[in-house]
Length: 401
Image (tube, rainbow, N blue to C red; front, top):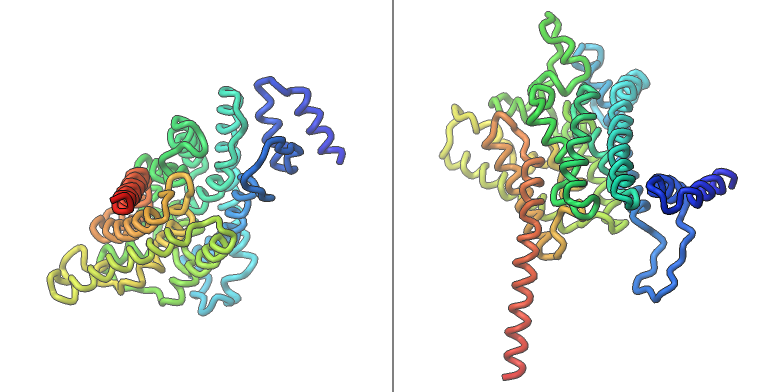
């Protein structure tokens, strides 16, 4: 009660000043606003934007915790100190040594992401004189989950500043951006610091420091090895549960699936976009399988490894599942109409696998596919709405005839 009263006093003290947005943000983050609507309302609900964002964060927490264990586990496997887990409940995965490595490496990424991103948000709120927007609450959690574990903190800080300023604020802030801010940050990292975002030395903790040493650690992802036409070295169980190298929170399809069900149940995430993304990926993967089966491409082709992969396995590797659930469903940058969501999601899945196969230098397409469809989402909705208008006009003419 004392803290709440002190914050309320500060809020009243700085009311009408440039610092008012900062105090309002802290006050409403900790407590529900004590304001009531005096005019008539159409929708009554107990939630607000902050609580909606918190639900998404709750759906991301299992991926974060698993990523911490997996960071240590992949390090110990690469150094020969641990065997591959045989099941989701394997003791050599869920141990404190693995967790400690994950905490030391991943927690700083989370802290830097939030501190830098929220600082930029506060600065722009004070300068523009508007309330601090809640959109970065989710972005701040997403960013550490879609980067390699050993990414230098200063690179992350620079990318976050770029993503928040260029990806959000120049468009007017939360609700106005045309690109997913988290993917904008990752795209900046990929194109500005490509050696830290691809290859076989960035996905396992300690691999970068071991370059040039006799016992160098290699942590190549499944997509990287398949792009070089190497045989698949992980079981379906490993890929589904996430015992594979990759970005911090993108490896466990099982936990991502649980997060998807939670978001659908709470009506936060669009099941249409998720399902249509999966359908699009399966269709593109199936087409590539048919190309291989009909002998239109030989084993010597640089595209053979990923083309010949069973079409449904594309859902279990890389960042596709994570992107389809947590990135493609961003309510601001995604399509808004129901039919548009089906088209938008399908094209994301379709283009993701296409880029994954045809770009061996960057064997992961979900980031670029989502950003591309973010740009086309307004166009998709425009034609969907225009189609509905034309059909209604035709019905109206028939009735009046």
